[in-house]
Image (cartoon, rainbow, N blue to C red; front, side, top):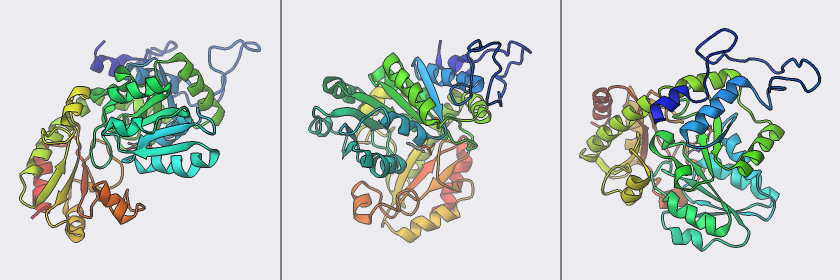
Length: 379
Ligand SMILES: *Cc1c(COP(=O)(O)O)cnc(C)c1O
């Protein structure tokens, strides 16, 4: 089955008692049993809920996996993966990581004796040099935020396999429409469903998908034991969101391409970071593992002036100044004072997060209107 068909049909069946075509919101905590242990597959909604179950099957299908699990946020999904480890285990991750992922690794799990190494994953020899007998997990994010760097998932999977470690990929930016890490050798895919999968900026949720039965057993054990599950209403909203994921992503990609080229030719703009450009340092890897380049774009201004950047993010009308990404509406952000404000200036500048860097989450409005909005803000 192809992507658009799976997005709409996988995991979803008309309701048996009424024929309702949409999965009902099973807003219930518990399920009546005919006799002790004699139930219909559902006992308690932390463990299992029919609305959530439909969504978990749907997300597993669009990621070409077998087992899906949904959580109360993307970070709760990451929390589940790290809880598969034990003290002394080592994790290799990228130095260009989503801030919240870095924070949970450093301030929560380091305390429990898990060791994290943050390296530049664009060069796989950097990763190899940190592998040792304690390496249990390689954590990849690609494309990265906000610099849009690309990590070669296949080459990370080779390193993970020879180290006997798991490979997990945060696929939030690319979405399964553009990239399927499990097909490239990853063991676990993670999503901040809050972003493109939900797609309408109305839900906070996370998900994990795997094709491995042993990993799935651990995943469900931790999901049920730690209890960071998602609600039936939110599961319903995301089921609805995913039905248009392929259409939305098509438009995100088209608009992203038009805006990336517009910005590239603008006299006030210095650099444009978007993996679709042939001049992007990892363009070949992006072309190999992605089916399109998405609607996330970052750029810097000539002169690299903080005030200029702050004035532009204020002057736009259609682009809303906000954290987050992946919704139908376009958003604009200023990483140095917003998402990356807690990182010391010298460190963030080394990774490219300079004062004039602006990040766009290009929505699915009409590209001409978005370009006009940027044009007037850039005058
Ligand atoms: C937002 C985000 C997360 C965290 O997800 P939440 O749903 O906010 O908890 C993780 N990784 C990436 C790449 C993100 O953009």
